[in-house]
Length: 182
Image 1 (cartoon, rainbow, N blue to C red):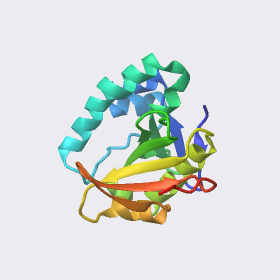
Image 2 (cartoon, rainbow, N blue to C red):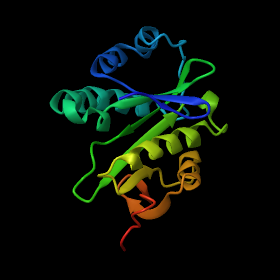
Image 3 (cartoon, rainbow, N blue to C red):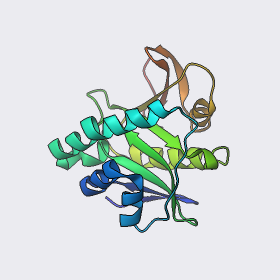
Image 4 (spheres, rainbow, N blue to C red):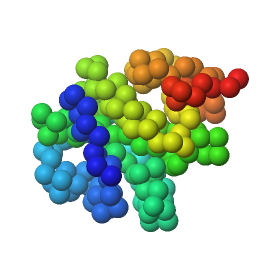
């Protein structure tokens, strides 16, 4: 699997060895990939990165090992600013499509790059690739309940509000040639 390319971004699916380096430190991965060091900052509180590290160790890496033929559905994808050669965000999926053809995505962006259209560009590029996969019919994403930039990104990328879920609200986008059956 090669990287995805958009106007300003390269979206890189990480291999198992990349993920192992990331689990040691972001700087180790960026150095190994010949990227400039990002000094990554999120608007989210420290719990977000703790949850990310936990998911990396207990979900992402074990699933890459257990499902090497489906690794792209489990891996973390770096969002790299092409001109700056700098990691500015990340994307991922919670596994391959379920029996109904549904997957869940998540994403985050370095606070220094928010509000400049990078997240929308990254999500659109990711969705283009996702909907090229024949088994995917629907993509969902969950956000916090209160209105935030992540919800605005989902609106701009064609998601519609579905309703409340345990930890927030859910959004959905269907494959353009496969409308949702209500």
